[in-house]
Length: 341
Image (cartoon, rainbow, N blue to C red; front, side):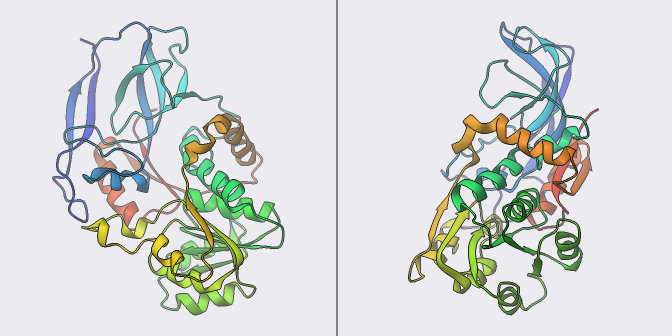
């Protein structure tokens, strides 16, 4: 066996509603010896993302549920520490779907493993945030599903998060009016004053419908959906003829005990007359453009054009609490776990 000791967070029980303390467990796991063509990677940074919560349920979605006793899914930045492959050498940095653990073994030619060509002035962890999967999700969903045109009004929920951050700043670059929806005055100020949105509506202030209407005097041409629930209901009457709604997710429902009873954005949008153009999308639809879009976003970070925030939890043991907090909007910007240097 390998000399390395691994720790991993596993799914111990399927959460019923909000995650409880014994649903996720931290345990030690052995690291096996490498086979030919494999590498051992040490996880440096772990990304926490809303999609992980539905995968803890015993329900078939667009991705398979996590099995009981299995490591919780997640993407990381990792460094290769052992290699039996010519494709990746010791010291190489990669993004990979390691899950919530400190070490991971995988074939060097596995899908969804990408060597990082780190650019100057681009911090390593941003390859999990605005230059990573969330950033590419925001960019692709807006540009290829939303198809913005100069002069249009783009609204994005969860505007201070990594997806919303990229959606709004990209919309501004395309000549659109960018309106965010976020929770609390601090996040709203940040979205306008630092990210450069034209307006940001505080959904916690109690005047969501009126505030959103005031922020969108010409209606809404693109609504980038991250949240669902009350935000979608407030957006719906303001959608212009020809509006497009890229649906990335609806995090407000992810802790529901019975997902089948949840009102989704699809229910709200399909009840409109006319029904606006809308669809759920996955960033993997543009997997062939992974490196191209990563480079676009990394270049914008390097130049200072793409701004962002991060919330960082220290150590794998703190990942469950950070994840629970993220689902309640306690994080500011991208939620990360720093595991090693």
